[in-house]
Length: 284
Image (cartoon, rainbow, N blue to C red; front, side):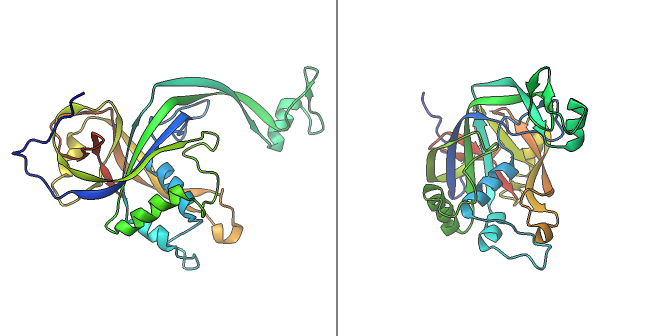
C-alpha cells in the first residue's frame, strides 16, 4: 500500500503533539441508552466511556464542580481541558442471547409465585427475576484514541499511568468489565492539517464542538456524512457526598456528534500521517 502524501502546494498548519492510544478488544459492547430487550451497541466507544477509562487509570474517584464540598482533583481539571478523538473498526457484530437477572423481591415473586420458593420445573433457580435478552457484541475491535492538551506534561502523565497504573480504581476496562483489552500502541504523534478525499474504512465520531475552534473547521461537522447522536461526555453522581455510592444515579452532559463510516469528501481535518488516520478532536 502506497501511503498518500500531502500536496506540497497545500498550506499547512504547525504540527500538534497528541497522545495516541490504540486498544484491541476481542469482544466489546458499548450500550446505546434506552435499548432493553435487544441491547444495541455503538460501533466505537463514546466519549464518556473513554473518559471513564482515563479516570480509572488516573485514580480520579469523584468530582462535582457544582458541589462546594467536593474535593478538587487537579488531574480532573486537566482532563476536562483535553480534546479527544475516537475512531476504530471491527470484524463483525454478533447478537448473543443471555439471561438478564436481578434481585428485586417483586420480580422473584412474579417468577416463582412466592418469596420462599426457588424451585421451578423441578430445578433450583437463581433468586430474583430473570428474562431472556439479546445483546449486540463487536468482535475484534480496534480503537484509536487521540488526546490533545496544551500541557504536554499531562499527556506524559497519562502515558506513564497506562504503562504503570498504580493509581487505578478498578480493573482496566473499556465498556463492560468482562471485555478485556490490550494496549497495542501508546505513543506521542504529530497531527497536521489535511483535506484528502478518501475512504479510511474506520468509524469516526465527528463532534459539533470540534477543535481547533478558530472557525477554520466549523464546516467540517456540517459537511460530513453521518448519523446524528447526542453522545454522553462527563458525569456527576447524584448525592454522592451523602451516599458515597460510586454506582449511584449519574447525570451526564452531552454533545451533538455524527457517526461517520470513514468516507471523507470535501472536508478539512486533522491527520496523523504516521498511522494514516484522520483526527476529529472534540472540545469537551
